[in-house]
Length: 319
Image (cartoon, rainbow, N blue to C red; front, top):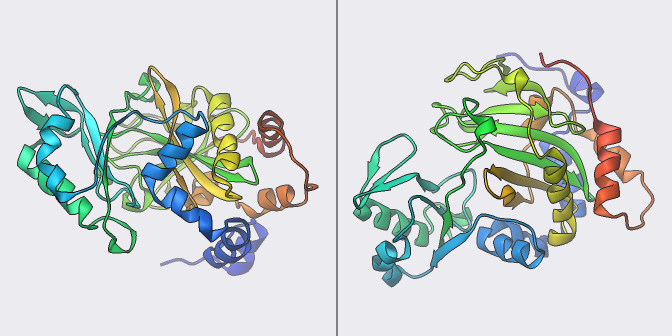
């Protein structure tokens, strides 16, 4: 296994986990606010209060005796997503994209019986997928109708856009594309493709899978360098606005593009991972320090977005 010398990482402005935890998460994210983002139901509630667009909520199941009512909660929906409110890393998310004659199908086409879905909800309530194994609630959301511009860029899953936001300024972006290896999920550690995105334009800069550069999607062979994320300004504005909504100084915003509703906020992360640096081929530290050096007075969302595009835009080819 090859290792990079620490001095080389430092010269590239790469931020390590300890530095992230101490200098940014610990310093800028009050612990009292973690519960707002660690619980997806609470995040959805504060987003709606802040008039930030999120996927529609179908139902919430919070007690074991309610599991038997699942069939009534999902009746009439052609697709939906069941997720644990306090899950992490994509664990426990069940996506049903097709319902036909009372039968339920996952994106892969494989069938899930009602009994299996009830057992899944029961496991969610028991805390099987939640942080710390705590009792949880099952959140049932409307299915995302992902924008056809992503056709061929993802395998059996909805691409999501992550923006790291620091003190209200979007500082680095990444598109996460599911693969067969990631089982249709958008988590990089499970084999999803991470595409570094230019903050100024939404254009693809560089892509990696398992930390190694790739030029084409491994399953669809779609050329990744041609990717241009639509609605980029709206995504930037949505992400920047999450600073006021959450009160967190350093956060990850995960968003999707719905073909009818446009950008939607999926969830917030108070401890966003650092793989976004690998996808972009660039460290976070210089950008974070530029924002830290700003005078401490309020700046509106539109100005912050404009400054981020000016400061952190990059005009280099994807390699």
